[in-house]
Amino acid sequence: MEIKDNDIISLFEKLNTSFYILDSAQFILNYNNLLNAFKKYYSNTHIAYSYKTNYTPKLCHLIDKMGGFAEIVSDMEGEIAYRIGVKPENIYFNGPYKNMNFVERLLLDGGCVNVDSLTELQQIITLSNQYKHKKFNIALRLNFDIQDGVISRFGFDVLDDDFIEAIALIKKNKNIYLKGLHSHFASRNISFWPNRIKGIIDIIEKYFPTNTFEFIDLGGGLFGNMKDSLKAQFDTSIPTYEEYAQSVAIEFENYFKTKTYQPMLFIEPGSALAGDAMKFVAKVVSIKTVRNKSIATLLGSIYNINPTLNKKNPPIHVISYGKEHKEYKDLDFGGFTCIESDYLYRHYNGKLSENDLIVFDNVGSYSVVLKPPFILPNFPVIDLSDGEVEIIKRAETFDDLFHTYKLNF
Image 1 (spheres, rainbow, N blue to C red):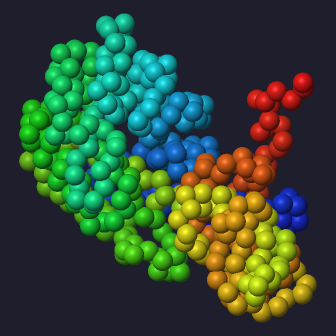
Image 2: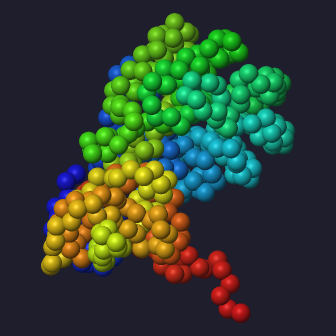
Image 3: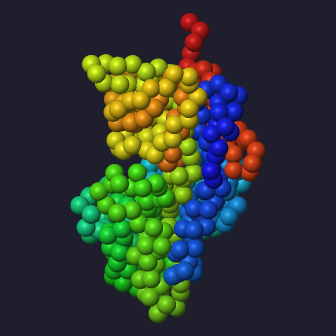
């Protein structure tokens, strides 16, 4: 959705602060385009949205409304899913640490836990022994080498004795139901994606030849849509949704069409859906020169747009709102914090004035969820997708941050 400069200026004048713009229409478009790309090759594909990437409740609700699933990694995220009305059977719990009280709640309600370790499985078996009449749905998170040079710390090493013991324990405990297999690798490079499906198929052939799984989950780790200026900063090509689908879904279809069952194929996108579905608007507070270096300070921080600190310049658009514009070369946009490395953008060339508004694009991934309560509370989130101004998240206040502290001594 294209947003006019005048609409952004009007919002700034009303809010009198920096703010995020949520583009839920773009989020919906991304969901449909990604899902359709995979369904083209394997019709039983489904999306389990990675809540941790951007757990803005409206986005999570849209996923549920469109028939998607919730991929959570904490009881906090699980509570979001419950409160927005996601059915427990549509919640899949990942992650290396799980609150066992919530695990018990979710399993009793019919949800699924993707088990990360033998210790976790033993804890779930202990729980299941208290509820002999209940079926506990689990999956095993698999850790195998996809040749990306990374030794992942998550899931069962399929070459380790713990994995063999886990399979034996599941077979021994009759109310533990192995619903599926799960994997997730952080690399977004498409060259490693075929190794994901090959690894899963090899494991099925070796350890589960008679199982009829309800799902196979390939995890996330997909690039999303981005402008050319951002693509150029990566050392690898940025695949399309179609290219990701071709790299695994065709092989998946070819393998399972010879089987008596066709499991759901899950993918767990986060950035691929949310990355370009959010912008951040920040005011230029001041401009100064330090030893011939031009620096603009913004009412915003790198932690507002890129808390993973990947040193890439996001796409930007400067809205002329100030009065005294000058031409600058190699100007850096600094943040409001007292951290020397807090720069939102490096090497800007062009006209700029104090009070101008800088619109940062592609800030939907991890921004609002990783921004620390450091120096200032976080800014509001506004959705303009339906042609109306909808406050999705109000500006945080002092009381929001400090109500858990003791202040009266």
